[in-house]
Length: 386
Image 1 (cartoon, rainbow, N blue to C red):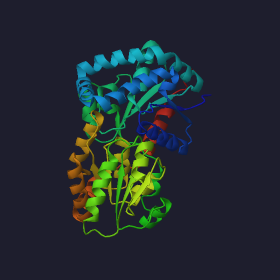
Image 2: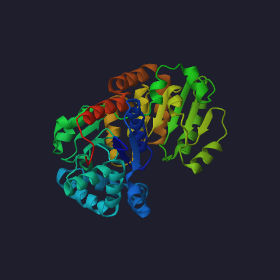
Image 3: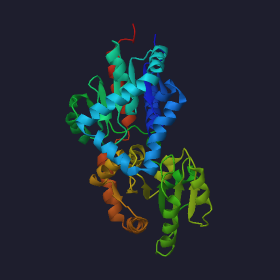
Image 4: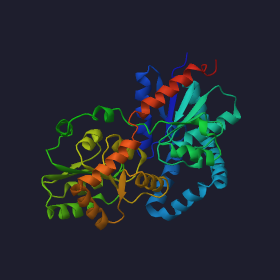
């Protein structure tokens, strides 16, 4: 008897990949399917995580142009194939033995990956050993990268129909893809039909006719305090009644302190919070960077989005996709952000247009759709190692 029917492997690079894993764990549990979540980097020395993710964060902060070049170059089919092979073999040297031990401990029949790194390691393992093990990738962005593509991967769960064509272009079979949406926390389903006043009460917010929610992801990235000061000044000079700006600083304590030092009765500041669903349900506009999870959460609640300049790589692809689908507008400067925010707050028709775009794209039940398909796969597979 296996300890887990499903092993969910992720990477704590930002909170999105882990949040998707947690949403899947909850959905699988509702179907009576045992699952366990593990960060793939726990399979090896701690320095491997610090070096790999640390290098990524360092490039994003200090040399974003270099990271963009590397991302775009590796996104081509030929270079992507070579670079991911080298990368996976390098990671396997340090994480492979731990991954083997993890699989022996849990004996799963299906392994789901919400990040491409563990999917790559599983591909190396499948080539080295004959395993009766199904693997699946849950893509947490609105685009595909070659690092997700492996001929021995059995299923890809994707955000939209558009991504199926990308899978085929990158050399894998389109029938492996299932359009489920990006898995989000069940709390977003809970608030879908909740009245604004009830959501405000849960989030400990005072009543406001117009509310702007600003987020910089779990790490609180971006000069949010600069944007907030500019918005407060312009909003005070506008003719908009009973408005409020809510900012989530995430785990960025320094940012939280700077925001909390701003004196305004129209400003409410949160650090890291589990009330995001209720904050979104209480808001008229979300200003954020285009992360796959946060955007999907807003889309599930049909909340119009104003996107900040994206990080290079996958966020730039998300940015382009979301603007194309008419669920968001974009701003690249503080002046443009301030101007568009006031326009969108005043223009109900424009916000309605963005809500319509979200309504067409939203897949709030994504986690349950993935769990349903996994249930079908489990019914067709035998216990690993039996």
